[in-house]
Image 1: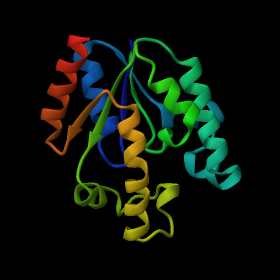
Image 2 (image 1 turned 30 degrees about the vertical axis):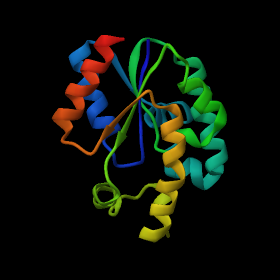
Image 3 (image 1 turned 120 degrees about the horizontal axis):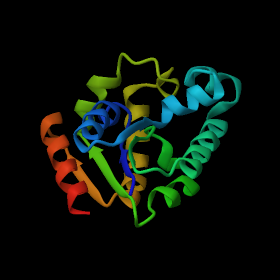
Image 4 (image 1 turned 45 degrees about the vertical axis):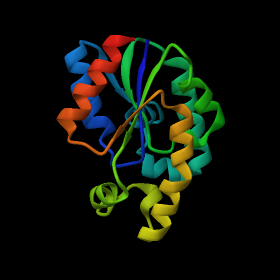
Length: 163
């Protein structure tokens, strides 16, 4: 049984995922980091050289091939691909959408150098967030709204242990 953490960039998937994995005694995998390791390129270089479409294909390959019982922090846009959504929604998976408010997310990401943030206004980013919300909802079997990391971690541990 895999545990996938989904949500918009800046919601805390990686930091929370590492802590949850440690407490559950499971491996932790950050899909963005796996893409970088396997391609030997940074995400910025992948976007620059091949574009977002190729990056999403790399995510699909990882979702298809990495099926061990572990905690996975996904990229914020992994749900954009219908194929990725179907893989994540497998009934044997626990999928938690970490869903802070827009104000919290924007504070966290506004200084970031992530490829999808370059040359985008706050209004553009908010539209992207709003467009992805139904996709996160489609995939998630649990949603944790804005809360402190400790609370989110405790909730995820309870969810996982019940499954």
